[in-house]
Image 1 (cartoon, one colour):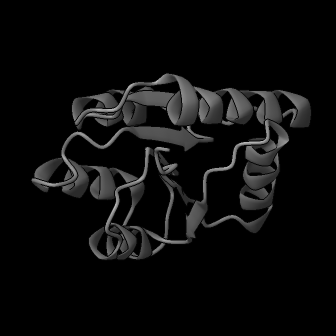
Image 2 (cartoon, one colour):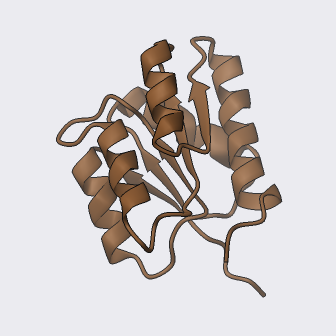
Length: 137
């Protein structure tokens, strides 16, 4: 049986973290969810784990190292280059969207303000990246 890969959630807001974890668990995903609460912690986690996660859910506005810089470093690192990264953020700024995709984000998802829409969006993200998507070798 294939080992389930983890999901790396990079989120500094405790409320958004709790909602995201709840939404991912709502679909009975059995994947381990690793939480990093700032950009440096996210890079440290990626450096230390043996098996890369199936996806990184990355906020933009993070302490220590901002999300776009984390994405830049992920894409510059040989081992992490093809790691799926979804920018999951409240920013709808065109500049952030353009830069995110320019740096190689696989997807850009604005966090809906409505609780039900938020949980639905995160549930669908989790299902897609953890179950449906066929990862790069």
